[in-house]
Image (cartoon, rainbow, N blue to C red; front, side, top):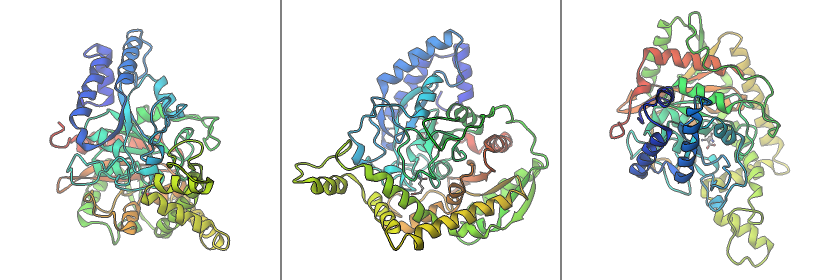
Length: 483
Ligand code: GLN
């Protein structure tokens, strides 16, 4: 059952081929069986079975949503009422959330069954899932390799069949990069499309939650349930949510695809480039017109991001002080000791590095030189995308420069690690939607292609992804041992 898509499972639940209880039990069993992948931080077995029981009742009353009775899992960055919400950190290892994030609430209302909370890089800072307090997550395509990050647990859960689909968050690439490295489909929505309420903040002006699934159709169904205005999030956008499934079969005839030459230059692995070329050709056959464009500001994305994101994180993470909630050091001698030791012992190395960088960039005398300058670059990048979208409908390119790298390979070289997001970060700075879809393999490891759209063009992206998945089967491959 675990290799079936959400749509197929929803059908099976309706025809009575299996119940949600049976489906949920099958997934719970697989989670135990493949525990070594370390995809889950918390498995909520009892709650899942209760959810499944409720879903079966709802299905028998014909009041079901497409997600009713479907076993899903939440990235451990989303607050879940009465359930540990750790954000991958020792700081929140003892934090039981007193409320549900809006995304969690919405998926509960749809009747989805929550199997548990997924592993992630600490506070979503990382590209390999190795910064998690709960240990590295292993890529099911080769367990010596990283799954990508920060939503590594989510990508692994979907690709290894430990959940039908999962939520992720993307501040600089954390949905798209792990999706690409694990051979699944992931979508980072337009900033403001999905509520951030109850989603633990890393860099608030960049963070965006989104769906991760086996294919574009399942991604559309999950996004449908997650998206929408939320008065509890002042940056959520109050415009109607389209029906993401209705346009999936639209023709791509005449679609204008832009390929920024900056995406295909030095740094991109040759084998990955060949796969992208093949995928682009597939789009040509589907009726698309390919247009080369140039986006000179793309190269500025990494330096701008690594000023803005740490600056915001240094402010957001100041709330973890050992006083109100989270980790508190033993026997503090005074208030300063309480702050410094609680934070010193509760945060990991990468989180501390970011807080230090951010605090430095925001300090008096440096603000203009770093933060203000980075914000100006951010504007230029948005402008560059805006100009491109006057010439083309969507932009395509790589998601990652290479396939998954080895566990431990980049942990001692933060700059090298930061470069893994070279093709994804600019999109967050501009607030645009983008997808990663499976496009092939290099030496048995998955490769993704990125599709970037204009603001709120999620429906178009899903359509473009779905049409490709109609004529290719890369999204249907399953890692060996997880069939
Ligand atoms: N890898 C990037 C970082 O470490 C992006 C992470 C993310 O999108 N959450 O900041």
